[in-house]
Length: 422
Ligand SMILES: NC(=O)c1ccc[n+]([C@@H]2O[C@H](COP(=O)([O-])OP(=O)(O)OC[C@H]3O[C@@H](n4cnc5c(N)ncnc54)[C@H](O)[C@@H]3O)[C@@H](O)[C@H]2O)c1
Image (cartoon, rainbow, N blue to C red; front, side, top):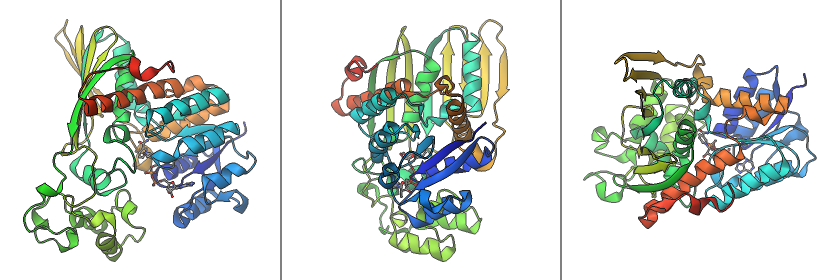
C-alpha cells in the first residue's frame, strides 16, 4: 500500500511530536514537506526526514501556493493561526489534522467545521485524551453497563504549579489577547473528554473562575522582577532558577526547558532567564488568564457534571469519579477503581499505556491519535476518527458557553451556542 504523505505546518512543539509519530510508523506514513519560519525547528525536521529542498517552506502561505503534493496537512501553528491554513489546505483537497483549540472564538470553530464538511476531507482535532488506553478502558467499562446509567460526574484537572507557571503565567498562553482563555487552551481537552464519556448532549452551563494568585499584589516582600536577581527565591515554589536549572543539572533536556532556549547548558539557560520571558517573577508578568475555574454542566436525561481546573496543584494527573445507578468508577489517568453497589465488591483496573518516552505523550494519546488519523486517510474511512468536525465543534462550544457564563454571571443554554450548526 502507498504511504500516506504528510506536510507539517508549524514545526514547533506539536508539529515535531507528530513528525516523530510519523517516524514510528515508517511503513505507513512519510513526512514529505515542512513549513516553518524558525530555522532551527524547520531544519531539524528537514534533516530528520530527508525532505527535499523544493518541499521546504518558511510559512504555510508559501506551502499553500504550491500544487498539492501530499495527502495530509498537520496544522500545528498557534491557536490564532488555524482557520486560514485550514481553509487553504482543505480547499486544495488535503486531509487536515488540526491542533486544538480549533480557533480562539466560536465563529472560527464554526467556520473550520463548515470548511471540513464542505470539502469532504478527513479531518480531526487533536483531542488526544480520547485516544488513550485509559480512556478506552473507562469507556469500555461504562458501555458494558457495569455502573448502570451515568447520573453524575466529577472531573478535576490539576494543571500543576510548575506547568501552570511555565505555560500560563510566564509562557505562550498567559494572555488571553495573545492566545485564548485558559479554559479553551487547556481544558477544551477536558470538556471534550467529558462529552465523550457522557455520550449525550450538554444542555446548559454555568461557571466561575478568576486569576487569584499570580498577580503583582501577591509578590513577596523583597522579591525581584527577575528570578536570577531574587533574594527570596529560595523560599519561592515558583522560582524559575529552580525550575529550569535543576532540569539542566539532572540532564532533563526536553520539555519544558527546550522551550526557553535552544542552548541547553547552564549558561544558555541563565541567558534565557536573564533576557527572556521565562526568567520573570510569577508575580510580575503580564498574565491575565484565570488560575482557577469551575464549570457545572447539565446534560440530557437529568445528568450533571462538575469540572474544576486548578493551577496551584501538586499531585498531577486528571482525576474523575463517575457515579452510576449501579456503581461508581474512579480514575486518576492511570488506574481505575470500580465499585459495584449490588455485590459491594471493588476492582482495581490497570490501564498503563505500553508506549514510553515521547510516544507516551498525553498517556499514549498522541501516537494513537496520529496513527488513527493516518489509518483513516489510508482507508478513506473517517469513522476511525473519534474527533471529527461536529463533535469537536460541540465540545468547543461548551467551552465558549462556560466562558460566557463566567463573564456574564449567568447560566448559558447550549441552544444559544449551536445557531443551527449542529
Ligand atoms: N493537543 C495537545 O495536547 C496540545 C498540546 C500543546 C499545544 N497544543 C496546541 O498546538 C498548537 C501549537 O502549539 P506548540 O506548543 O507546538 O507551539 P509552538 O509555538 O511550539 O509551534 C507553533 C509553530 O508555528 C510556527 N509558525 C508561526 N508562523 C507560521 C507560519 N506562517 N507558517 C508556518 N508555521 C508558522 C512557529 O514558528 C512555531 O514553530 C497550539 O494551537 C496549541 O494550543 C496542543
